[in-house]
Image (cartoon, rainbow, N blue to C red):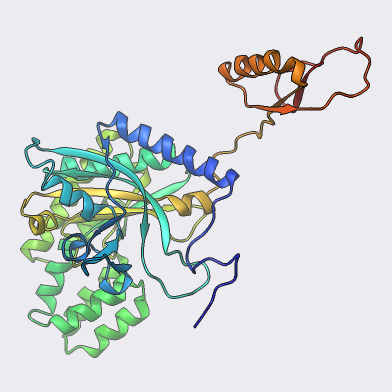
Length: 392
């Protein structure tokens, strides 16, 4: 049996030292304040949920859930995201609240991982859910808010890649109809960004030259608004065309927000097909090669809790922003140190209270008397930096 050493901790978890906590809390406060200004109210849910409700409904695969048994033998899970717990709350405690509902959160979530370096089993997410609105305006709102949230988190250089799962659903059904196995292979290649494998799958399918050209053309569907026009030339399927029409409406709203410069269309991006039902997006910071936020529409989730309403939202990957983005640079201000002897305790502690009320960080310290002359001047300096105040 493996017995951990005294200073070891499980793979995938970490300690946050004071400097990291300070930065994490600043990101959290700034982002939640931004979300509050957009009308999103913060919610907190339990760390543990029932597997048969929230665990099953989660977008996380069963193999990545942390499961445990309570004293009654009921299977619980550590929350693997915040969307499913919020869906539970909206379908129960908030079932009488009028729609739409706007909620925000900051929480730690847990996903089981292979024991590989750099992979995290516990991490933080900060995000929102907009429930009860299926419009392009709602999708555009969460994209625009994601952009403002990244700025509030200190991410200055980034791009949002936006797609729609309905386009690929429709196009695949048009080119390889009733062939679920082939469609899954094609989706897997796009999901993994394995374009070589995607093209190899195309060559292995029994398709005409025209059909192969259509599928091969998918990997070039990345760019600005003109990408939607290119997509319409590839497919006549009603679902594919309706999806592109929806994206164009979202783009129009983003232009009205004045944020379309941060957005590009990427129709190769599919997210989780079993979870997302419409528009999806990911945010990439210039310093990092992987997403710092992701989101989209998931209209089927709440019906699992008995309240079939549409929903859309996003989450910032707060740990990635904390670790990989240059972000905030705050000067390190040393505390003021107040030293006093027992005879001067009251005056010393009152001075500490005065300085703290003025916004300073103060450390107090009882010292033993020395042989300094009583004529030596007291030291009081609260102008910043390392300071001392001595009373004898």
